Length: 167
Ligand code: NI
Image (tube, protein in one colour):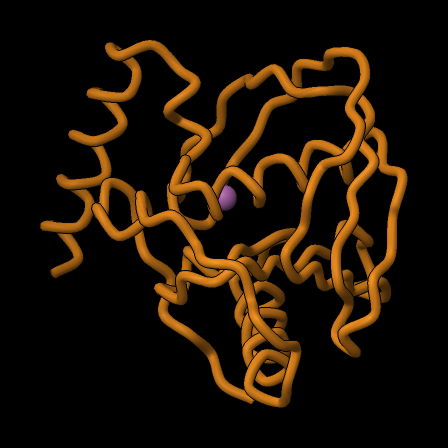
């Protein structure tokens, strides 16, 4: 396994739209393993392939505190969504920034697992938020784009300044 570098907002590559995975093979399983290792090391609770500059529809999530329930979704699709919920979100690609975003409260997601089999999952609470957040990455969308233009500009300035300070 390997740690993968995570792209930082406003890197334009974060706006790439990911392509569907044609076949869940060893290459995709290795990507899932590397993404999981990268997510746990960060540490974070979700990571989309887009964030490690791989533009294929793969996300990993583990919202448990003891990192015991790794979920991998290949070609995820939301087939049903209900209600609304506002949660404070953060993102490994937008370090140190947290803000409120409105999402569906519950979602039903269909995807392929690491063995290539199709499954569906009903999610609510933090898991539902996380799935929607990570699936946005696959569309090239970062959560800060739900915020006002003023906030987005402030975040860009802050992150660029921080990047210069650590360069
Ligand atoms: Ni994110």
